[in-house]
Amino acid sequence: MMTPRNYKALTNPWHLLATGFGSGLAPKAPGTMGSVLALLLWIPLQELPVMAYGLFVLACIPFGIWLCGRVAAEMQVKDPACIVFDEFVGVWVTLFMLPVGWYWPVIGFILFRLFDIFKPWPVSWLDQQLPGGWGIMLDDVAAGLLSLIIIQVLALGLGMS
Image (tube, rainbow, N blue to C red; front, side):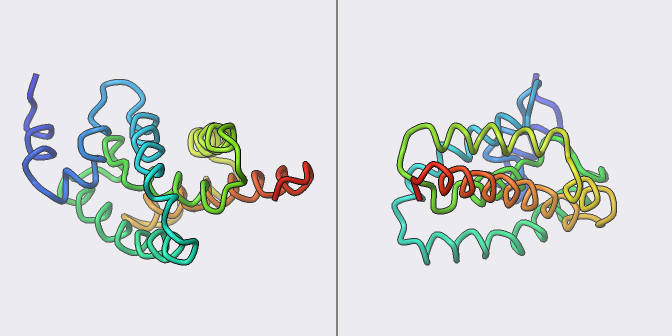
């Protein structure tokens, strides 16, 4: 059934992007659906040179703060579940400079989802204390950074980095 929110998400370019091209409109687990799409989008992104990838992800952070804040304000909801651009960026942070192996993106995806769902400190603090787009985006960036650190430490410990 097409609701006014769904219709706007599919016709307004800012809402379309914020909802992860509609992946955030999934009736169950919209954050996970957005993260799955982010993982699929990462496949071509990983081919970028390291510096270009890093700059792209860094540029997505302030853009995402603006985008998520704008769309949440238009929806008049503090942190709508359908906004998943923050998951995109969190996943892309997680998967920065992955070691070689098919299992690393899987491990990264799982770690990111766990940190995003359970929100340990500082993820929970950022989510609760920062207003608007800042809180929407930066808790996922923090979840991504925690996941990235764990992956890199694991890879280093296993002699794979």
